[in-house]
Amino acid sequence: MEGEDRFEVLLTEAEIERRVREMGHEITRDYEGRDLVMVGVLKGACVFLSDLCRHVHLPVAIDFLGLSSYGDSTTTSGVVQITQDLTQSIVDRDVLVVEDIVDTGLTLHFLLENFRVRKPRSVRVCTLLHKPSNTVRDVPLDYVGFTIENRFVVGYGLDYEQRFRNLPYVGYVRTP
Ligand code: IMP
Ligand code: MG
Image 1 (tube, protein in one colour):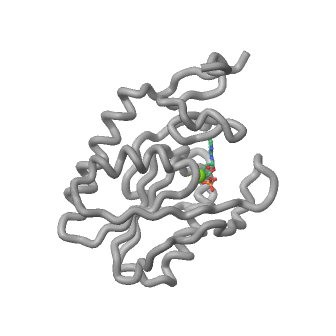
Image 2 (cartoon, rainbow, N blue to C red):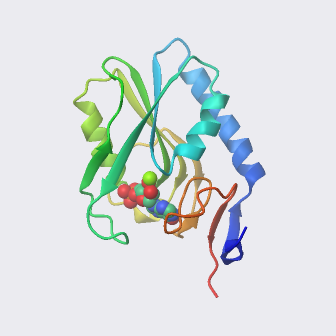
């Protein structure tokens, strides 16, 4: 598509598809007989969640949470606001937070603290991507699709200035 030539492919559509299928099967095994609620963090996780949930062969519930960070877009302050809350109760239920990418871990740290007071039965985290080199807050990641280097990535839900979330692969910005 137009403008796509500025990106270099990091993870192909086929690689992502294979890994997402594996993760779905792992989640299926781990949550058999439980009351699983998959919670996607908007907007980045929507593509990953929609593919992932179709490989989870259990009667799961799906919900979304909108978050926004204060401060400018280049530095994560860790002060996060809920812009759209869950539509169902998670009391006594098994919550799986689905994220596109964990970078500093600040967003997820906030979210896990917020969820804890709502008394779910369990909370686990599933992220497609992890950039461990930027860790500020160590949060337990239960399912990780790919561990990547410290590069700005785009596609498969991740945006570049709010665009290109619809790329079927994950790419990084080519340096001229
Ligand atoms: P954290 O609080 O630093 O872990 O921030 C995680 C959030 O920052 C993700 O949910 C993304 O929305 C965004 N983010 C971090 N790295 C990237 C990237 O390389 N591309 C696009 N968005 C990113
Ligand atoms: Mg996000």
